Image 1: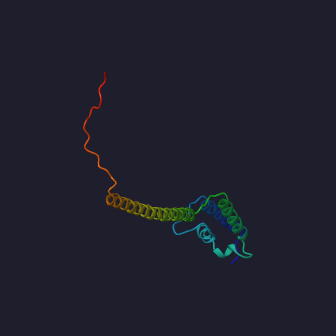
Image 2: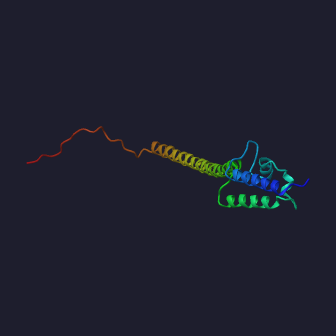
Length: 153
């Protein structure tokens, strides 16, 4: 079915208005910032955006504008922005988890080394006590009393 020039102009105006809304982030519930939602919002058949159909140039313009926003770091679709943010957060959390696991491993190794050193020191102390108790060369001093030797004249 052919449409008149006035209908075509009216459709293009609706498409451009819907395009502007989507690019501002006004995404309808259940929609995305894509051609399907654009066609639905503009009340135009989606197939009119493909091939040699009348609104192919508008699809190209829409895709170019979406890409330009994404290149500038802006994502008009809030769901896409949330997905991007969550992916970045997951990456950071994985890095933190790997760092935490490495720290736990290092501390576990340190604890093992510390316990081995303490055990070796304990064995040395026990050995030295046994050696000291087994020899009679250790002289015990008498209790300390004040003894004055000599006098001052």
